[in-house]
Length: 347
Ligand code: OGA
Ligand code: NI
Image 1: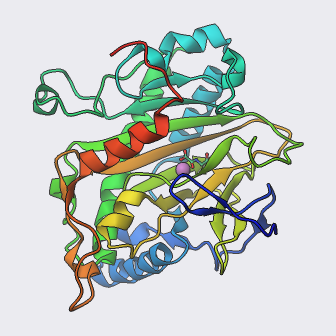
Image 2: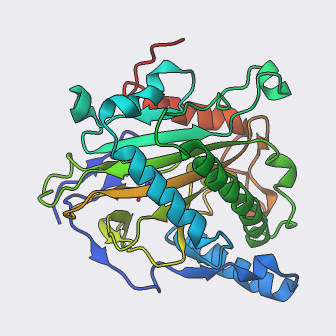
């Protein structure tokens, strides 16, 4: 452990080094989501209590019995592997700099001569709305059309099918979060009709000799939206979460077959008055093979008012945060993160 601590741009500590400790399930719980598909209120309540504990603790957990068919997950990973294996020119047919918003392909900067994100490339899609949708007519950002590469065949169909499955799961998860927060199960329904949603396929280069934590594929960060549903490529350990008594240690999150990794994002932390933890994480792919993950960032409607939830404010205390529109909060964070990493060629 180094004596001097690095800080991120928000002044938060970043544990140093590239190594991490492997933990057991007591530290990173596995939550059985099966009760949310049934109608037993006691079973749901029990699950919601476990969820609450995980969210108030490490802010990360594995989600089991989530209802998404393994065949769909496998097919999506196979299709994204086909995409990333293409020559750069083919991937650049969906060049993210060519369209408004953040959808499309982001090359590894080493492939185009830069330094940022040297060990990572990615493909983003969002919850695109048609131009005549009232949200678009109003000019609300973060719902731009998606960009699709010319190859491989079937890429768009498979990505959209996976995105739809994530949307369905995220709605059910909002129900579980509501129960965990002592709110009615349908509390978030009216706030998630056309939610701000980003899905990102991350592709990390192999870095078996990684020693410098400045040169890793996924820099330390927290996610911005309410929660993230992450599919990890099987058998490859690379995701790390900052934890420990003094928040000074990285722990590894080895993939567990049949589960997603879920973590809380900054929007949920603010909404819950800091009760739920949005925890810093990073990706160090010190394996001999490349690695892919698919992150689905679940947010709420752009116009949804985000005032601290009443069940999260102790009696006699004032909320720590003023109300804000969800979209304004998330847009600020997203623009800040992509600033400089992406010079737009279009306005
Ligand atoms: C992310 C992220 C982790 C991973 O995309 O925000 O943290 O394992 N991904 O790829
Ligand atoms: Ni993340």
